Amino acid sequence: MSDVPQIFDSEYRFCLLLWEQEPINSTKLVELCKERLGWSKATTYTVIRRLVQRGVVRNENAVVTALVTKEQAQNARIHELLEKTFQGSTPAFLAAFSRSRKLTKEEVDQLRALIDDYQEG
Image (tube, rainbow, N blue to C red; front, side):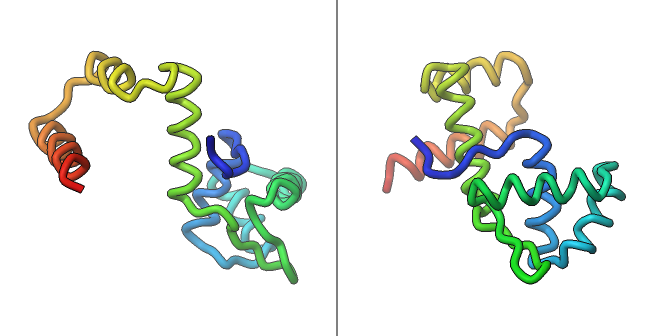
């Protein structure tokens, strides 16, 4: 189970912007969210407030920073997907993924290297 607070899809898109730019002034973040996400000022501040309440971001002196890293958020999302959709089975996930999308030779080689590295250490 992950200790990372849940980050919903629209919040995750917001966090992607934040991770790119942090630390960032909240006024500048509002402008960025309007430009890239089409959000209003009110929407951006609502998302910031919700993420502060859940411990995902900090907004101190109008400067917003993430308390959760991109890697932590991605790991939590993957764990949730595996649990909800594949009953926690990584092989079932990989089988479904490989049936739905042709893997390139390079991707197969990368996966093989990951497995080899895992077995070695």
